[in-house]
Length: 401
Image (tube, rainbow, N blue to C red; front, top):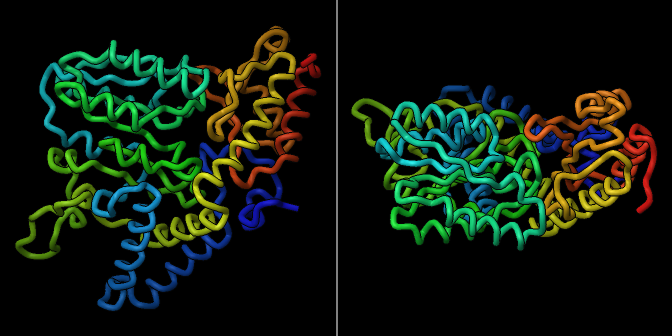
């Protein structure tokens, strides 16, 4: 029997043991029904008719208000996007860059965002510099102290942007975003702070971090267990004052029609054109279901209980080494293979393939080479035990504690 009402609403979990919430969360049946119902409503009202627009506007504005609560920012600072990459890069490309400006990028950032930063630097003559964070695998307190020291040593008079994820997608470490923002505010140029929140929204409370960052981009299809193709970005007041849209469409404008041309004064200027309204209904329903599981702190407590169980169990398996030296701050648990597993020819892709054959789904990461498992509020203790038992069998048994 499931301890989570939400789990019983996810068809994907009926036939598999799932640990890939950081890649994509299963869509609950009520969310799928909300999407279908929205399609039916739009077609019944008429997809481009006077009666449909109040429904569309209510659906979009309702989700905007709901997400504003999750982000801890006014709705006017929230723009809808398709995904994290567009949420990060569209506002970023509209800032007033000058040749020689430096971008300081954490060395554990997702390559999709890094690729966009490289192209931005190429076009504007910017310099890219790296901030070491991937090796911060200790306690949150030691991580915060070391990061502050490294950031201070890395900032220069030319630093214009700092890029960090809230929860690192590879190691699972938590970055103290609000503290970083406060530190940057003391810099003479007050560099902008771009935060990739792909692994945070839906897994841990984000209000303080999202309110402190200049760009805080998230997606709805990972830990929020919503549909693909819909995300959101929270933007600071100063970014809204300084950044111009990279792409412009009818949703960027205050008024749609002949003579229109004035951009929205709020974050909506970074929305472009037609989106799939039923996805908004689906994500709203997924958020409702997560809220029914408890508040953000309560959900994180459940997530950490399961990730802590997994992390502790991995310490006792021969040939496996967790990337974090302490229990995870959220739901990401990554591990690599050491002797004797590596000496016996085991590698991350082989582990994932063998587990997949047994109905257990994890994923590999390339930098660093490791296996990543994600626990969510719907993950059960029995599922974690099954994963540990299978890994122990593959690795050759348990070592002494």
